[in-house]
Amino acid sequence: MSKRTVLTGITTTGTPHLGNYVGAMKPCIDASHDADVQSYYFLADYHALVKNRDPEQMRQSTLEIAATWLALGLDTDTAVFYRQSDVPEIPELTWILTCSTAKGLMNRAHAYKAVVQGNVEAGEDPDFAVNMGLFCYPVLMAADILMFNSTHVPVGNDQVQHLEMARDIAQRFNHHYGEHFVLPEAVIDENVATLPGQDGRKMSKSYKNTIPLWLPEKRLRKAIMKIVTNSLEPGESKDPDDSALFKFYAAFADQTQREEMRQAYRDGIAWGEAKQQTFELINGELSEGRERYEALISEPGRIEEILIEGAKKARDYATPFLTRIKDAIGIRKLG
Ligand code: TRP
Image 1 (tube, helix red, strand yellow):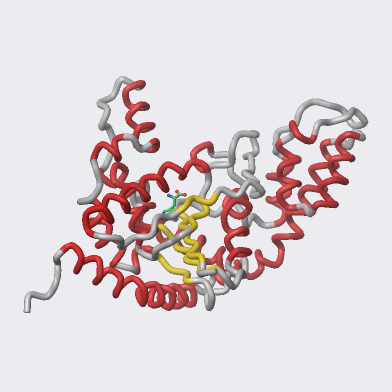
Image 2 (tube, rainbow, N blue to C red):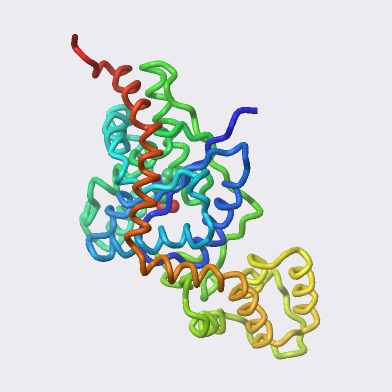
């Protein structure tokens, strides 16, 4: 069996939260231990630029997300771990792909359409606050993916359309210039939990309901105590499948713990007690990583070195591949 190439990026906006950990980082780190997988994980800072105009926040978020991958034990000898902006071949490929991308395809992108629709509903000009980065976002993402001939891209449901677009763009290029790009597949792991936020909706920066991953113990406990529950009293039977709190517990528990907690809900565990146990479970899993994180974040120079090393490895692949692509489109030596 040939090696699979698994690639995913995290946009460097904001502080990493429990949802990033459960839904992306932890499964990706597990996958990187598979000998049949070559993994590429990167910090999508040029994607962050679409929304983030604050230079200090750009840097801080990149630092925090990089430190998080490392604190969680990503092995950078086997996985290629880099910052998107350190690989100039990616924006170069973006332009080449932009010229193989139908504008009509981009018009259909959900993220862009949502902003336009919001403007229309608010009585604004449809293009209000829309920059070309937002419009072309899927092309940059296609370049991220196609640059390394990724076969599998683990993403959340909200990114599936972007993967379809990457395939579309690759096909269009291949059709005209020959088979250069591998068509990537989205991987949506049904076993990977989507964590709700404190209010019970999906945990997301846009809903402002996230719980930061590296909160100090006391504040983590407080944050978990705030997760919404219903008004059932201690002793009254509770439905684990209708509980945001249970989803938190389940995301960190093993099979046995999960079954026992299910039973405890049915037997009427008090919400306060269920929250305490959820806190202890999550805190137990994160406490070592938290110490490593604190140590790493205080040494940004070391993280920088690791990222530069990673970019070198990424470019070992990207530089010759881009030369082939440029050759294919006729940008080649004249002599
Ligand atoms: N758009 C993705 C997100 O917001 C992040 C991302 C950028 C990405 N480039 C990627 C994910 C390439 C997978 C592959 O979640």
